[in-house]
Image (tube, rainbow over the protein chains, first blue to last red):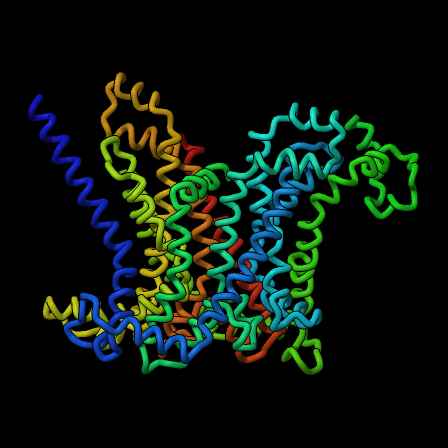
Length: 279
Length: 320
């Protein structure tokens, strides 16, 4: 009996050691980013490298703020990501709710069509999409970033699954008897029930738009309109000699999203897994 | 009800509605009755038609044109496709993309599976904490990741070269070498996606009913037998899901090499992936028609690989 317990104990220790080793790999680049952001450029490239924090964080940040309009880029990104997220929440939940709770001719085919669109890779039509934006006169504007992303198949699918399970049809029938129209059935009765599914969709959309790079890089041509990722990339391309400043900029760009993620992480991660299992 | 609908020759859909306030047709009246539902789902289909479907059709047209995006468009038949298929740079980009995909996907899914097993063990403490830590790379922006890993793989004074020097190994100019760039890009992909896939595998493992394992134990099955006879077959659809998502993702690698070594994929061109090649040809050199053709080339490639993957992962259970 003692032998078995001892073996279990060793097994547990080994297992935790393995997990911790993996965790260190996962976290180390963040630590390294922090260390470099507190060092001068020559210290970053010194041999042996400095593995502990230095005193230069604030002058590095000050140089970031004087070389690019960091807060401008931050607000731009916040604006685009929030606008996209709000629109996605509204249109996806409206459509997902409708697919889940109503019957109408052609519903099944329309839903299959919707799922099929998820298979089409966006890069296929990178050039024609840009040309269309040019025709609309949207190049260089946030419309080009927000409008095509304001509704998506994944979110509709996600909300539909959730609504099917959690919005009782009896409740909708009762609402109808009380004289609720279609929109009130959605807005007043169902939306509050859909809140958990909506909060995941919001976080998922927000993170995706915040980190988006290729499309904003193509669309945005005015420095004042750059999103954080484009601004960061141009900072990295221009200031090759002042690397500690580039690193400090990277740190500033990464922090907001990580802080946000830490607040929602537990639920968000379970939802990611649930979404994958369902599809 | 359904049959009667099918018997009608499909009438034009919503267009007919406004002109018939009191439609005689049964289907049109059904559609009119449900106009609010159609309205509610219409935004997706409208947005997809304009920004999804139309660009695809348009890119077909564009791929037969010679156009710099500003001047006159001239028809040049299959020249774009011919150029693509004979351009060594294109094939290099295809090769690079496939190599990076292999280097990254196999270790990534392997480590993810191991982490999922470890996390699934009954006696793990702080499971939530580990899950968050492993998932964190996935929400970090690729541009930031590429900048940080650029310093790890730096040619002269990078951290990696320092570690090598501890073992007496001379410095490697990672970012000047084809394999060095591909390794750096693959490491970034692995780092960013291991946690994501582990979380998905973990959910898959937890969804296997424990009754199955108990029954196997009673029947005298060993742990290894249970692994191959219960765990793997039950996990197969989820493995397929992760393989397909990694294939689609792997074919579209762009930000990592673009930020790490620039629009040409580095001195050796080792980081020139298909999307980077497309981006460079279309938006740096302004060959718009050609860029559209490359888009189609990429589409064919993704389709081929998705089918191949499907076959590989799905083909086996038919033998069981």
